Image (cartoon, rainbow, N blue to C red; front, side, top):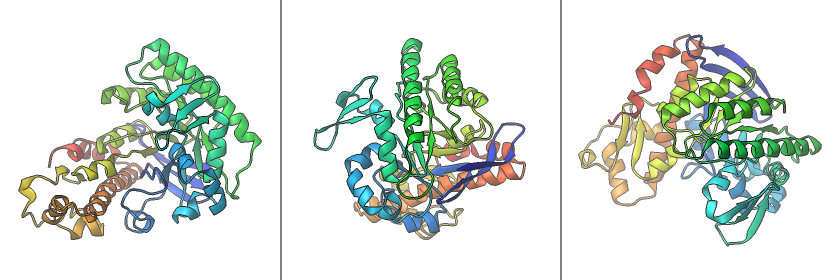
Length: 376
């Protein structure tokens, strides 16, 4: 895997590049739709590729290890042919589940022992086994196992958890470099910078992980309760340490405004469940701002969902029809709303990339950062 930096905004540090993988090239900055168990909810792979221009997807190691399971994935040749997606795939390591399933797990130096949420059976994730599982999945970019902490921890706890994250990363890379991919394509491994919201711990984390000479680096442990400005400051100081010639991936972030502001601080890759999750609850992201499609004022609104987006779902169906589908509890609502939100996210990334390449990113940021999250 290689990363080609094409342009950088001198005023902000926003970057445009090309991330070359064995399953295709990703034009950065880029947003990755979340396909937790091998599917982006309610959206077919062909729609993602052909209608939305998605270039890379994210899968979840924890959930894929539970079902369909490693044996199935090895038998079918990995996740790419299983879900009929021929582009790049990134998998996170299950580290977020260490955080979110706090009542169902025990963390030790060896790894994490889970009581899984499906049938109550126990399983253990170690830095080494997480690499092996992602080898079975066949993802193009793999993540190390890390220990994520809430934003509310004190500095001592953040330092302790980060030290373990670094030790786990060292173990993961030793195992990674001693093993081979199963399916004939290269798999990169990214370490994850942790340290909560403490600048010194973040710098120490990034500096320690640089010693691994990874092909790219992730920034984790944000969007877990801290204020947005704190997130932005943390990303900026972390990217001051991370190398210029490697891709930077901010995990689990966020709103359209979060994307713009973190691109302005040098981030290249993003993922978040927000586009599809918010779609399911009635919130649409549009080029005019956010819309609660359940609102009664849309009952007879025959205007297109988002005429500015060159996507069939956005330009064909009306707000009134989409509101009707929510009231009738029709499954088609899920598809249309999810496509709309993903279309807006992908439009935002393409627009930022063009603005960076053309030297007008600051103007784009001024026009769109607040506009995309205002109430429409």
